[in-house]
Length: 307
Image (cartoon, rainbow, N blue to C red; front, side):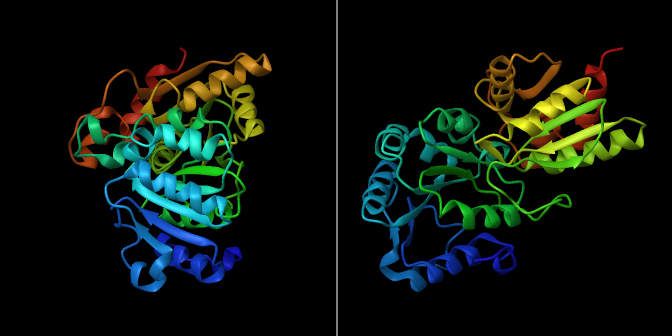
């Protein structure tokens, strides 16, 4: 399937992949929101295990061992937390090909409380051997990623984003590659997922105010585009990591680990959740309360710049 053949939304792309490749099997743990139209089309290649994420991962591993390419769906917090041991032991250690799709990740779980807030999923999944971690900015990029991920000979966790594009992409998704959206040398912004749209809007406001901004969307957190991240750290006077995730284990930790590994020093300011969950309310209010709207980001970035 070429880039031109990719549908701009998730379900049609999933359907096209299944039609093209009989190895692809779709699984869900009673989380059909993104794939409601597939059961009558796929028949026995659509498996709903019910609210049993551990069982779903075990089934996915068995299918992968038999040469299939399973794509498993569940809420992000449950597929990563409830099934963690199964993912680690059944998929990560033997390096079996499976795509794990986490629904309503990060702030997108908005009105739900701590038990349903997947703000530690990146930390959990990137710590598993052989696991890839992908966080698209929108549904179109998710669809592009899916085409590549089902071909990978290793497991991948991907955050499901059911949103239209929030900024003009510079190039299609490529596994292991970051997307440089703006070039500058004063303020560096590293981000991923749906927050990239809010960072883009904030960067535009900062540029309009006379600031020089380098904005980098990092859809692949593992494997990481180290060159793009290091260039941002080396080029910009202050770099900000912005994410809907706990401070520990997310992008800020990834950047800090990279700096230590490469022996680099830079001024990095993280915007993340520090040892707390976010306010359970509707998404616009979550972003406002937690300080992740474009206007709030501009205020926070400006205040954090050295005088």
